[in-house]
Structures are given as C-alpha cells and as structure tokens.
Image (cartoon, rainbow over all chains, first blue to last red; front, side, top):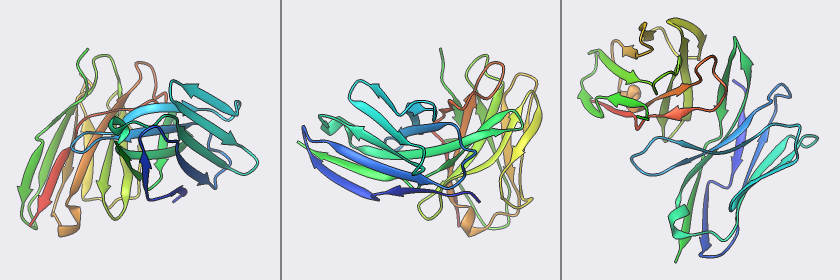
Length: 114
Length: 114
C-alpha cells in the first residue's frame, strides 16, 4: 500500500504560536493533497487541500506548502488557538476508477495551551 | 443541508457475529466510501460505491462487504467478527457527478467486538 508519512505524531504549542505538521509521500501519481481535522467523537472534516500545480495555498490561519521535487507538503497553523486542538490528518490521492481515494497519514495530535 | 448520517453510533458484538452499518450521504451525493479507523492502523480505505456500483476496494478480507442503494444510501457488512475488527467505521460522501476528492465524513459507527 502506498504510504504517506506524517510527523510529528504529537505537537504541543502555546496560544498564538505556529503549528507545523509535515507529510511526505512516495507515489508521484498523487495529485490531490487534502488535510483533515478531527475532534474527539467526530468524523474528520476537510480543512484545506492543494494540487501540485501550486506551491502554497492559504485559507485564513491555515496554509499548505507544497514541494513537488521533495515530495513533501506541510500544514502551517498561524496564531494557533486552543480551539485548534484536534488531530490532523494529511492525505494524498490520485484518480482511480473515476474517484479520488485518499491514503492517509497516521495523524498528528495537536494541543494548544491557553 | 443535512450532513452524512451514520447508524448506529455505537454497538457491541461478540466474536463470530456479523454486523451491518448504515450510511446516508449528503443529499445529491452519489459517491459513498467507507473507512476503518484504529489507533494502530490509522484511517484505512475499505471501499467506494458510485451509483450502486463498487468502483474501488481497499485491502480488506472478503468478510467486509458493502452495497449502495438507488437513493445513494449505503450499508457495509462485516461477517464472522474478529476482535481486531473493533474500530471506528467512517462513511464519507462526495460529489454529485463524481468523487472529487473532497470527502464529507459522518461521525462514525464505533464497533466493539468482545
């Protein structure tokens, strides 16, 4: 199975700080890279996504940076807030049979201290 | 617009039994996919249905099966339950005309096998 390696496994930051989560992939056929946020007892929710034709995408305090040559992408959360405390999953996918089926990273548990 | 609804939310079964989980996608979405989430293996793709046809299948044994109805509602079944099947089973819907990669997850069905 294709792998997506995510790090760190857990992350603790202070309120107002920057949270950075990194992912690396192997399959160069991947062409859609979403990030999901999951709160306890809830299903994952799409946070932000990027395709490799852009190097960076920003939505509010969340930014994805993409490095095609290194096959790496990262999520930056600026001005981290306690409400951002959740598990974050990166994913990579390519079209298969007309669908995008994601391969997920193992997740990063983020805790933002007030 | 109502989100993805999964039932039941929690269930307990014993080894050897079978279980059926249900998923109602977002209105208009025709793609439904299923995922298994465990602490050890993370989020793993089970299968995806589009317009009542299975389009993609993950690397799970034949004990795991699913189907989709004409109204896009989907069910998954696990037969001959094993202890290792204990997990959160997540359903996601996507797209009115195709699976665009943007997945909308339900809150999951938490299965405990004793």
